[in-house]
Image (cartoon, rainbow, N blue to C red; front, side):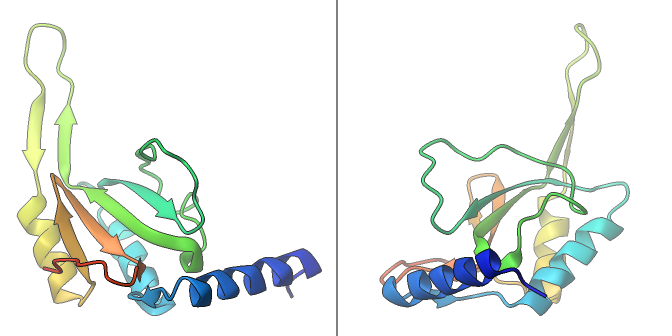
Amino acid sequence: MDTEDQLKDRRRLERYIISESLIKVMNNTKWEKLRTLMLEETERKPVWRVRCLRDKREVEPQWDGDWYYHLPEYKYIEWLEIYPINKEHRGNVLPDKVTDKTEYYISLLKSNCIPFSIEGESLRVWGYQWPNQEIEFV
Protein backbone atom coordinates (compact mmCIF):
# COMPACT_ATOMS: atom_id res chain seq x y z
CA MET A 1 0.00 0.00 0.00
CA ASP A 2 1.40 3.37 -1.02
CA THR A 3 1.65 6.22 1.42
CA GLU A 4 0.01 9.56 0.70
CA ASP A 5 3.39 11.05 -0.26
CA GLN A 6 4.06 8.18 -2.67
CA LEU A 7 0.66 8.69 -4.30
CA LYS A 8 1.36 12.42 -4.67
CA ASP A 9 4.74 11.67 -6.21
CA ARG A 10 3.18 9.17 -8.63
CA ARG A 11 0.60 11.76 -9.72
CA ARG A 12 3.33 14.40 -10.13
CA LEU A 13 5.32 12.02 -12.31
CA GLU A 14 2.26 11.17 -14.42
CA ARG A 15 1.54 14.88 -14.94
CA TYR A 16 5.17 15.49 -15.86
CA ILE A 17 5.14 12.67 -18.45
CA ILE A 18 1.92 14.05 -19.98
CA SER A 19 3.04 17.70 -19.94
CA GLU A 20 6.37 16.82 -21.61
CA SER A 21 4.65 14.44 -24.10
CA LEU A 22 7.12 11.69 -23.25
CA ILE A 23 6.85 8.39 -25.09
CA LYS A 24 7.23 5.29 -22.93
CA VAL A 25 9.73 2.90 -24.53
CA MET A 26 10.09 0.25 -21.80
CA ASN A 27 7.53 -1.34 -19.52
CA ASN A 28 8.02 -3.01 -16.13
CA THR A 29 8.13 -6.48 -17.70
CA LYS A 30 11.03 -5.52 -19.97
CA TRP A 31 12.86 -3.70 -17.16
CA GLU A 32 12.51 -6.77 -14.95
CA LYS A 33 13.74 -9.00 -17.78
CA LEU A 34 16.82 -6.76 -18.22
CA ARG A 35 17.51 -6.80 -14.48
CA THR A 36 17.14 -10.60 -14.34
CA LEU A 37 19.47 -11.05 -17.33
CA MET A 38 22.13 -8.89 -15.67
CA LEU A 39 21.78 -10.68 -12.33
CA GLU A 40 22.34 -13.98 -14.14
CA GLU A 41 25.63 -12.64 -15.54
CA THR A 42 27.76 -13.85 -12.64
CA GLU A 43 31.09 -13.57 -14.47
CA ARG A 44 30.42 -10.72 -16.90
CA LYS A 45 28.16 -8.50 -14.79
CA PRO A 46 28.54 -5.05 -16.36
CA VAL A 47 28.40 -1.73 -14.58
CA TRP A 48 25.53 0.65 -15.31
CA ARG A 49 24.46 4.22 -14.74
CA VAL A 50 21.03 5.74 -14.89
CA ARG A 51 19.39 9.06 -15.60
CA CYS A 52 15.98 9.54 -14.06
CA LEU A 53 13.17 11.79 -15.22
CA ARG A 54 13.22 15.20 -13.54
CA ASP A 55 16.94 14.70 -12.83
CA LYS A 56 18.53 18.15 -12.70
CA ARG A 57 22.18 17.03 -12.47
CA GLU A 58 24.52 18.58 -15.01
CA VAL A 59 27.23 15.96 -14.40
CA GLU A 60 27.13 12.43 -15.73
CA PRO A 61 25.71 9.87 -13.30
CA GLN A 62 28.18 7.56 -11.56
CA TRP A 63 28.71 3.95 -12.63
CA ASP A 64 27.29 1.27 -10.34
CA GLY A 65 27.61 -2.51 -10.34
CA ASP A 66 24.73 -3.54 -8.08
CA TRP A 67 21.82 -4.75 -10.22
CA TYR A 68 19.98 -6.11 -7.20
CA TYR A 69 19.52 -3.22 -4.76
CA HIS A 70 20.51 0.05 -6.44
CA LEU A 71 18.20 0.39 -9.44
CA PRO A 72 15.53 3.08 -9.02
CA GLU A 73 11.88 2.31 -9.63
CA TYR A 74 11.49 1.63 -13.33
CA LYS A 75 8.86 4.34 -13.85
CA TYR A 76 11.50 7.01 -13.07
CA ILE A 77 14.20 5.81 -15.49
CA GLU A 78 14.74 8.02 -18.53
CA TRP A 79 17.65 5.82 -19.66
CA LEU A 80 20.06 3.26 -18.29
CA GLU A 81 23.51 2.79 -19.78
CA ILE A 82 25.39 -0.48 -19.67
CA TYR A 83 29.18 -0.38 -19.96
CA PRO A 84 30.17 -3.73 -21.50
CA ILE A 85 33.94 -3.28 -21.24
CA ASN A 86 35.70 -4.65 -18.18
CA LYS A 87 39.11 -3.27 -17.23
CA GLU A 88 40.96 -5.33 -14.66
CA HIS A 89 43.86 -3.58 -12.96
CA ARG A 90 46.93 -5.86 -12.87
CA GLY A 91 49.41 -3.69 -11.05
CA ASN A 92 51.67 -0.75 -11.80
CA VAL A 93 53.87 -2.49 -14.38
CA LEU A 94 51.40 -4.56 -16.39
CA PRO A 95 48.70 -2.88 -18.47
CA ASP A 96 45.08 -3.38 -17.48
CA LYS A 97 43.42 -6.52 -18.83
CA VAL A 98 40.57 -5.33 -21.10
CA THR A 99 37.62 -7.60 -21.86
CA ASP A 100 35.12 -6.20 -24.37
CA LYS A 101 31.72 -7.94 -24.24
CA THR A 102 29.91 -5.37 -26.41
CA GLU A 103 28.83 -7.87 -29.08
CA TYR A 104 27.65 -10.33 -26.42
CA TYR A 105 25.43 -7.71 -24.73
CA ILE A 106 24.12 -6.41 -28.06
CA SER A 107 22.96 -9.91 -28.98
CA LEU A 108 21.53 -10.45 -25.48
CA LEU A 109 19.49 -7.23 -25.63
CA LYS A 110 18.34 -7.87 -29.20
CA SER A 111 17.28 -11.46 -28.50
CA ASN A 112 15.14 -10.21 -25.59
CA CYS A 113 13.59 -7.32 -27.59
CA ILE A 114 15.01 -4.67 -25.27
CA PRO A 115 15.23 -1.32 -27.12
CA PHE A 116 18.66 0.29 -26.92
CA SER A 117 21.07 2.53 -28.76
CA ILE A 118 24.84 2.65 -28.85
CA GLU A 119 26.24 5.76 -27.16
CA GLY A 120 30.04 5.79 -27.47
CA GLU A 121 31.24 2.62 -25.72
CA SER A 122 27.97 2.18 -23.82
CA LEU A 123 24.65 0.53 -24.60
CA ARG A 124 21.77 2.83 -23.61
CA VAL A 125 18.42 1.26 -22.76
CA TRP A 126 15.69 3.88 -23.08
CA GLY A 127 12.82 4.15 -20.62
CA TYR A 128 11.28 7.21 -22.28
CA GLN A 129 11.78 9.12 -25.49
CA TRP A 130 11.33 12.88 -25.74
CA PRO A 131 9.19 14.29 -28.54
CA ASN A 132 11.26 15.10 -31.64
CA GLN A 133 14.18 13.13 -30.18
CA GLU A 134 15.75 10.91 -32.80
CA ILE A 135 17.17 7.73 -31.34
CA GLU A 136 18.90 5.15 -33.50
CA PHE A 137 17.64 1.98 -31.90
CA VAL A 138 19.75 -1.09 -32.68
